[in-house]
Length: 126
Image (tube, rainbow, N blue to C red; front, top):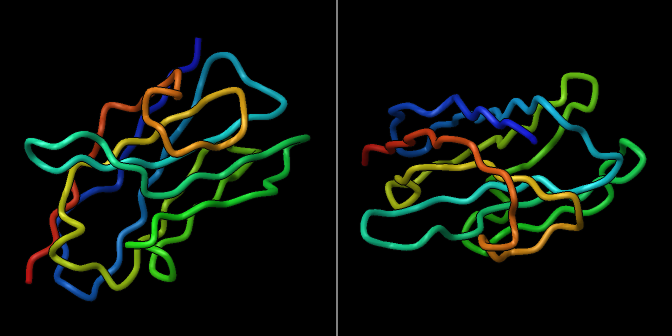
């Protein structure tokens, strides 16, 4: 089993930045994918960004159009922790953010991910 703990959410003004963290523990994989999703009230989780890695090195990143150029996903292999750097935040980025992982390449479907963090609230004031 893999346990994910995400953190780093909070309240920030529009135009500001936040960095979310996703600490993984338990079973590890030589290759896989980590992703961030977000969920608006009354809506399903939507893909934000994802990162595939193999041999301990990332090799492919994917971003939703709505965050491309503003958000950056990364992973510290030594710490087994993933990050989502969010810059130029907008009020419409307000949501609960979840990290997720799977032992395969990154995909955008939430149902394809085996492991999930508990979620962290991001609120952007306009």
